Amino acid sequence: SGGDPLKVYVFIATFPYSQYSYVEGFLDMTSESWLTAHIHAFEYFQGVPEAIVPDNLKTGVTKAQGSEPVLNEAYRELADYYHTVIVPGRVRKPKDKASVEGTVGFISRQVIASLRNVQCFDLFDLNRKIWRMLEKINAEDFQKRPGSRLKVYNEEEKPHLRPLRSTRFKLSEWRSAKVQPNYHIQVDRMYYSVPYEYIQSDVEIRLSKDLIEVYFKDSRIASHKRLRGIVGQYSTLTDHMPDNHRLFREHTPKNSREWAETIGKNMLKFIETLLNNSPEKKALNQIMSIRSLSRKYSKKELELAAQNILIASSNPTVTVYKTILNRNRKREKAKEQGRLTETKTNQSHGFIRGADYFGGKNK
Image 1: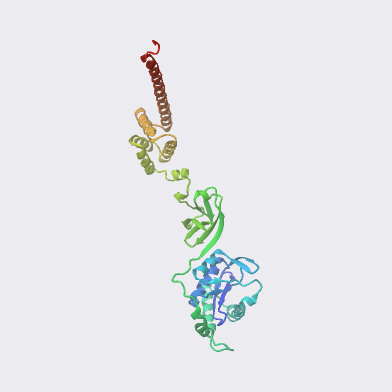
Image 2: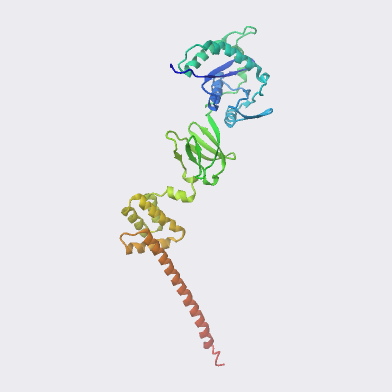
């Protein structure tokens, strides 16, 4: 479109006997492009081979240890989905895929070189030209053997392919991360929660177009719809929160009223008074303070104190409410202590009376 020229990377897949090939250009060598190329090739071939021998490149292979290369997770998933086996060629061992090496050279001469000076306005325009030439190459008769690439492929190789899946493989990418102290992980400057028990744990993240999945030791511990747009957004699930955070998250006027109803009618009236007398944020903070008292006081104590403060003031405050709670408890303890003292005294008098009653001194 008149801008600077762009570098294009060409993906080539070929069958060893027929040399029937698929070619597509990409603007990068990312995992997404690599996997997309495989999917498009399978669809072009209308089937999946039992085994694939790719280059031993970082896009598909995490590391190569002698003769034991390790596939990255996304590439392995693609192979599992299409029921094929991937056997990366050894580094600097072109004989592992000799037919591919020969076809790469041929394609380079026939396609790439002929398009070198052709202006393309976008990648699709370039690929359309590549595919047009590719159809001709695959259909042309061989010079030194009977038939064409297409004819030999259809007769000798295509019947042995596995059928395509009914739905296309969904692209995914795998990354590693450490769970932050706020029980979230960061992905592309967006934040996603995991159960708080995994704080500081190392986890694996599977990214697809619309979904984020988090794994710990092969077990999925969280999934989120992928966030888009303004960076810094949070996706936080209530189930992932510690209890104190969950209480704060659920702290709304509606939730506050529902909680008050579980205590009693006086508590509900007290909460309504706070919500009506103060701005919502201030009132919710006051109610949060009251709700936290349920860890120390029983429902009966909370309800009685609410009744007391409503009688004492038309503008009740949390400070006065706490004072009443404390006073009521002390008063109840004092009453209990008095009852215990009275009981002990009665028991003591009973023994004395019993001794006199039985005439112990007169005998």
